[in-house]
Amino acid sequence: MNVLGLIGRTSPLFDKDIAAHEQQLSDAVRGGRFLVIGGAGSIGQAVTRELFKRNPKVLHVVDISENNMVELVRDLRSTLGYIDGDFATFAIDCGSREFEALMADGGYDYVFNLSALKHVRSEKDPFTLMRMIEVNILNTLKTLEMAREGGARRYFCVSTDKAANPVNMMGASKRIMEMFLMRAADRMENSTARFANVAFSDGSLLHGFNQRVAKRQPIAAPNDVRRYFVTPQESGELCMMSCLLGENRDIFFPKLSEELHLTTFADIAVRYLEELGYEPVICATEEEARGRAAELIPQRKWPCFFFASDTTGEKDFEEFFTDGQQLDMDRFANVGVIKNQLAYDGELLDGFLREIEAIRAAGRWSKGPIVDLFNRMIPEFNHKETGRYLDARM
Image 1: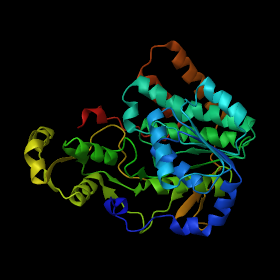
Image 2: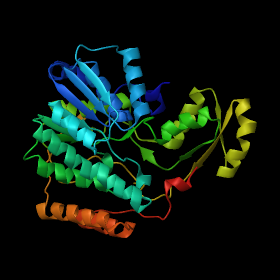
Image 3: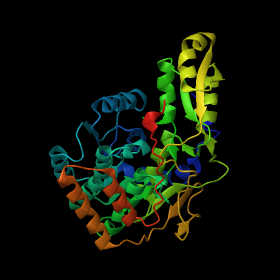
Image 4: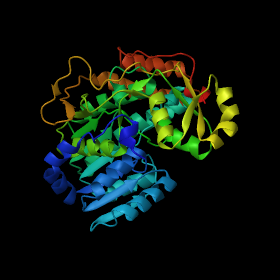
């Protein structure tokens, strides 16, 4: 399937930058020892592939998804084959004692942390929300400190475009994570990357199109949400460049240009179905779309329900940086860099950790106090609460 065509582009975004810096990237990878945390997710797999094909000395991959890890290995063996170095996968949680033992034994030069709870729907209840805080913030601090103690040269942790002027708790959690990274940069060099939606990444709406077609179910998508998309390979390339080419505290992001276009999910759904040889049939309701699936699909037609978005946390537009940040837009052809001297309040950060620990210890959680804490951490946080969540949608 032509992913670039589906997202409205004709050429890869970072080819010029990768070509211009290939020697530096290859030299760093060939002589390096790498750990990829969350390596079985879509972005983690993309990063692992970029490193693997440059023949690292050590490449270890950690993820809690045993099944996705198996597929990662099968995919690499079936395409790139083997490397001279030590390639191994570990089906363990980065918050576990097993991971601590691995880090104590590892001696890694570069640690990539691609683990994250990335869905806006994660804020619908306090239990999933607390898990998101643990993964996106607390585990970042823990694994960064382990990397520092192990003598790593650089720690990379993926961020999101939703961290710029956040309107949802997921984006705000990554914004707070960035604040902690800025403080930690005095002790452990680190960098990060913000980018847009990764097309057909696991759990994404576009990935859901594949699942709906495989199960012969109708496709539903918002028709008023316009987003930027990168391919999985582009997400891996941007993370790798940030870690290996960036300076301490740098945040890499894709430049907005004629090569990167806004497009709606509904438009992608139409192109997707047409490429598969189906005619999209627009239905007025979910019920109509479900009810007509058995009738339409044998006729090479596909029921679709397109709607205006009204769920909590949906941002009206996407942005990668905010006013007043120092940018380097000249070093790369299609990558911008936030030269981050992000201000942080040490007492505020310490207070955040104390309050989260107090909430966790209380044992009975509600969403309100967590939202209030995020508002204190990010005064400009414009939390968009509508009372509706994605789990209420088809």
